[in-house]
Image (cartoon, rainbow, N blue to C red):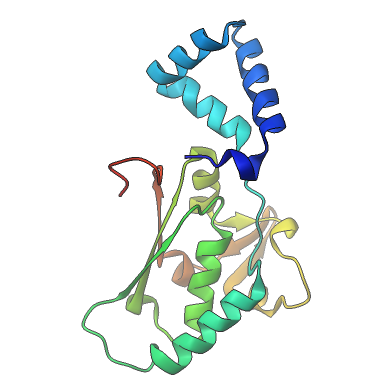
Length: 180
């Protein structure tokens, strides 16, 4: 479920070697067999390779468009079912929660939409479900959303329940034949 082109073969090779060394293994074919039979070892490799680098409203123009489109075409209309959105990969949740905030900004109500957010990293999903973020998750000039949707804590910024309730985080692999 990982795209080697986006990660880089040098990083993958280095991470594979690091994981093999950590368990005292030197034969790559033996390691591949282990990955195919041990979900725990595969998860260790995935957590080593993935770098969940993201922040709120990353690629701001897309969220501005979503908010504008939702305001004109969706938020004011009565629907029998909530709008369903899929966010893949969701990493530590900033993108999925940015979608939710954009829809709320458009005038939508939390019960009018639901976001399923999936990722292959259990560690990233645990952070997303916790919904407490440090300063690195808030970048750029437009940070007014932080005071509207977060409360400051000793550990960072905690997302308000009205936003958090709109997103469900799911551990899954988009390349799996049984995805969702």
